[in-house]
Amino acid sequence: ATAAAAAARMPVAVITGASSGIGRATSILFAQKKYQLSLTGRNESALAEVVDRCVEAGLSKDDITVTAGDLSAAATCDAIVSNTMSKFGRIDSLVNAAGILTAGAVLDTPLAQYDQVFDTNVRSLVQLTRAALPHIIATKGTVVNVSSINGPCPFPNVTYYCMSKSAVDQFTKCLALEMAPNGVRVNAVCPGVTVTNLHKRAGQNDETYAAFLEKSKTTHALGRPGEPEEVAKAILFLAGPDSTFTTGDLLRVDGGRGIMHPR
Image 1: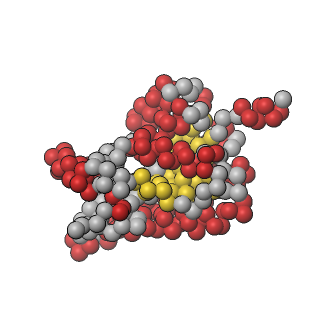
Image 2: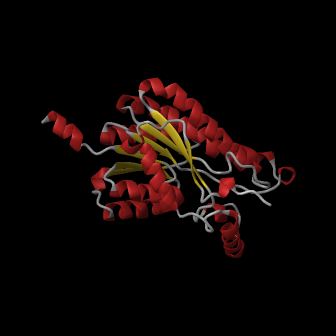
Image 3: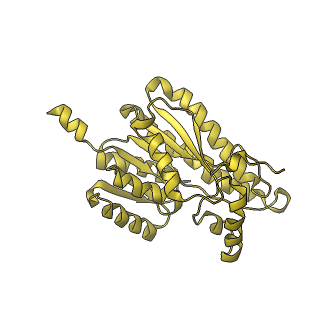
């Protein structure tokens, strides 16, 4: 009976950036796959909407806990972990989907922009991962970081963003080596251009963004940008039992963007 009860236990996933984009799509997909969810983001009303979508996908409200806040604050990271543990008693997977994009040439942007990008995309991710890892070790769980094709591939005018994603890639691979003796797997997804609010938040207006998406048809081998749901499926694969012999991998979900070269 105990084994049956354990088998019936729903896995628990902590998902950051859950209020929009890839994090939102991942939350809904994990809900469909019957994960209990600990969701975090900065936009409380958007998080509430995602909770509703997760309930529509088959979860009960009791299967979801929400912690709104800024991940750059250590107190927020501690609250996410403590809320998750008090609610569910375990963490099986951590999905680090929160991130920001800023644009501008190096000579034209203040160093404060560099600090902002690295604080959100790297330091906050490391901070929460460190807080959650003891509990993930206990379940022999998984970590999935949302990186970008901008990690391995250089692009002008988004230098700090590219640098931050390169850092996430190395963190993923190094931590995978450190955690392997504990049976914890650490992987990342590297999306290409994906239709989310990320670029608009970076300053693109509707017209500029529409032109950017149109151009993406020529910069991606598959002839289009990606959808967040496509990235979410890759995250689910790396987080769950279908990838038990994969660790330290940077899985490209980029429509061939990273193998395109001008000619």
